[in-house]
Image (cartoon, rainbow, N blue to C red; front, side, top):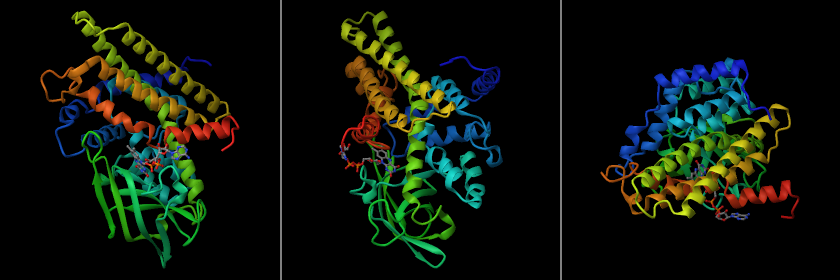
Amino acid sequence: MDFSLSAHELRFRDELRSWLAANPPPYAAILDRVGRSEDHPGADAMVAWAKLLASGRWLGLAWPKEYGGRGLGLVEQMIFYDETAPLDPPQLGQMVSLGVVGPTLLRYGSEAQKKRFLPRILGADDVWCLGFSEPGSGSDLASLRTTALVDGDHFVLSGSKIWTSHAPMAQWCFVLARTEAGSKRHHGLGVFLMEMSLPGVEARPIHNLVGEPHFAQLFLNDVRVPRECLVGAPGDGWTIVNGALAAERDLWVFEMSGELRTALRRTLGYAKQVATDEQPGHHAPSQRQSLAQAWIELELLRLNGLRSVTNALRGNADALDASRHKVFGSELAQKVAGLALELQGPFAQLAGCEDFSPDRGTAAHQYLTRRSSTLISGTSEVQRNIIAQRALGLPR
Ligand SMILES: Cc1cc2nc3c(=O)[nH]c(=O)nc-3n(C[C@H](O)[C@H](O)[C@H](O)COP(=O)(O)OP(=O)(O)OC[C@H]3O[C@@H](n4cnc5c(N)ncnc54)[C@H](O)[C@@H]3O)c2cc1C
């Protein structure tokens, strides 16, 4: 592997650095509100950050220029995450529009859909949510029951979706539903671009562990979605969704390693400060070992990410890399969050607004939100099954 950047990539990095120096992420104000409000500060911050990046044309770096992207490559995307992570910005990878809808439309969308939706996604004009999971159909997505049956120029959607992130604030939803009545498993499915303001769409908020209305259960009561909002053809849904989920998981390694590095640096800073303040017991040998081990694993995540990029650039991309990175990165994220909590001890319980909180409640917030990282976009158990069967050739 060659770790050095080309002259062109160095120019790109320098341009980004100067821009970021003048346009830092609007984040600090958000942390102060964590644990105190009924609104969703994390999502507000994410949208504000995306809008700021859009104003500098830093979204959709790899998207074609004709749709508003920059037509750049994987290395520039990696540089983007490397440079933004130390600023501790909100997670863009959680934006369904950039990670799932955009890449899917680029691959499977009609020209009219690309022209209508892609520029708005790059402008961070709309919030999108992902309507895949249903009550009883999570890991086993192919068992979903929501139907989308043709009626003239419309499809009529009926059923329920759950754990739909950002649904309470979303304008659009990327929905998977059955276009053939009575079809089974992955046959007869379609993917729809559904406007959340259509009659019959109801989003009942669900609060996450930190008390934010992060997701919702969606009730679709005979929602009439125009035919032109079907992506691909009826029956193409399963192929499209598999491509979409892979796109979502691909983001993990880039964004996650940068984010974890920043989190671990913060924890190391705290450990050093406590050691200097000579508070006995706070830098026990086992904690030193754990910090060093987490740093080693973080380096492994980054190097494995670089290896995937190198393979992809050489035309040897391995689809299973997404599963490997997802398992390793999400479990490491929980480990790193746990370490910060362990070091802070009882102080970690203080919310962001409390005077004696060592880090304005960040450690506790991270610990609680990271619980879901081994579930979201495919659980660790399911990813391990994929690796066992497809990489190791083990029986089902
Ligand atoms: C924070 C968060 C955000 C989410 N956002 C969205 C979203 O925006 N849109 C959306 O559609 N969904 C979303 N989800 C749902 C997510 O995709 C599902 O939670 C996930 O796929 C697991 O499905 P489930 O919750 O139904 O659990 P289940 O599938 O019921 O699994 C329960 C347990 O059984 C295990 N298990 C299941 N099958 C197997 C198997 N074959 N072998 C071994 N173990 C197995 C699982 O690993 C898990 O531990 C979100 C979830 C979370 C936590």
